Image (cartoon, rainbow, N blue to C red; front, side, top):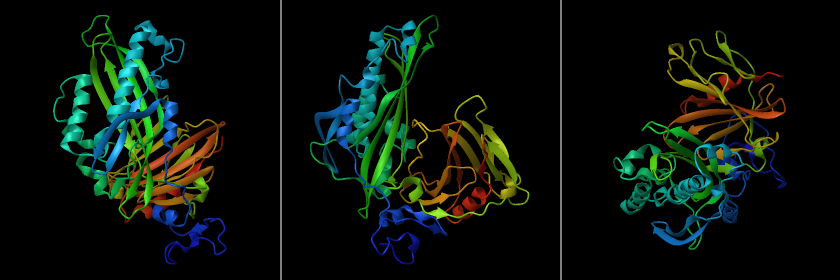
Length: 417
């Protein structure tokens, strides 16, 4: 039960019935939502891995947290199936199916076994990095420098450079000998195309992009459990049959938090009176309108004929800031028009909003792993029968975030068709 002084409106009812978060005068922290019993259990389902052809290997690894079993990509994993009549069928204009299948095997195995389940995800030791380096060298040849140094910008992402997770008070849930550490939620080909090799002539290379998403349970120093969804994307350029690998690039992201049992509607409501301050200018992205302070100007743009559509605005000297306010429009990847749930991030404040014309809207603000203090406003609506997200995001501080959030939200609306 929450202390009487901390968001008493979301304390469980005296009768023990379901909690219905009423109007609040301030956003609720994720810790408050957890204490109020508004979140789902922090757990994963390792049996789900089989549908992606990701299985437990025979290899046991021991690190400072205990012993766990490594992941292995099965020979019949769906991601390894190439259909000459399917989505990427046109690739047979340049390569035979056997080479494409071989490339899929090489790329997906590297992603699953040497990145997603790499020892360096939770182990910053020399032994772990030596194993990581050996796998990368086998794929692409000698590396140009120490991989730990080359990947130093992965702090806050997918590798354990400088023990950054532990520095934030996070550790993996206790290992169970014989069990893998994660639940796979996605493993698929993101793109595939051929390109002209730098050597010139008619020789072509194959560029392959693969994406893997997975969940893991982590525990904070105080014993609070969280789910850590992660996504890793690997792009590999193969220099044609027998040519080896030309280039590898890897990107990824993760978050730490808990899912709310009742979705967006379970987020406590923050009331905002619609108003546009004098002198502010209104801008529009798609059907979303919002106002920006005097002196703000558009700095970059995606253009009109791409998706997602996004704009970035520099707030300018008039506001005493050179920060940018990017606005992005993203279509929901989930089929149909079902409203999204809400994943409350560890260390963040959360607030449901009522924005004119929007189906739903939620804001969050807090400090990310890289030290950036972020305010994000997610607006959901259905346009022409299709779900659309508008995301407004900007840098702030712990002292000014709520005030700035209220200012921008008060100016926002979504136009009808």
